[in-house]
Length: 254
Image (cartoon, rainbow, N blue to C red):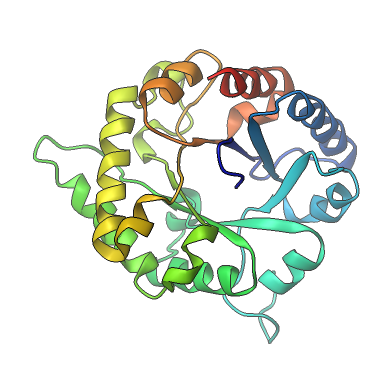
């Protein structure tokens, strides 16, 4: 992530269905990104499209992967290693997304993946988030445990390659009106920095924090202005070229 720039990450999940559709969406996103000098845009498409996009990025868009395995090589059918991803131009790998955690991906697995990614010289985007908020603030304990479990074995020298995405499960996949408010996002970002500072000192505070959870053109400006974040992890809206272009423009002007 370039200093001084907002970071917008598009997570296409298992979309679109064909290479032709993916290429059209990628080129539209590239056009929007080329006009935004104050924003770094990363696209995380499904694995089959990564090689295609490595020839199309033109230095305008960075390539990210939606996951990575915790080892290079070996008898791991269906997995993709950090070494392979780096070789085709990927610069950042996302680990611990809520949809993978829901399929029994543990904090230990997320930690092993994060370590493998940064050791390979890639950046890692670690997703954390609570299922629900409670009046007693117990959800903060959930976030604290996710952070500590993930980063307890990540060496301090790799912190410059770390990005954290806060994606509360109760806000994902809904209308922007159901997104976390800027004040909630700001409160959580402050808490995340405190936990990272407890673990790594002042260096922990410098780790960029993104927000992901029903972000659209309607609320992106307020979240960037008042949420104390460095950018967004965008799911559904990144599949709408026009909406995603608006988010990029809003971040560029924020």
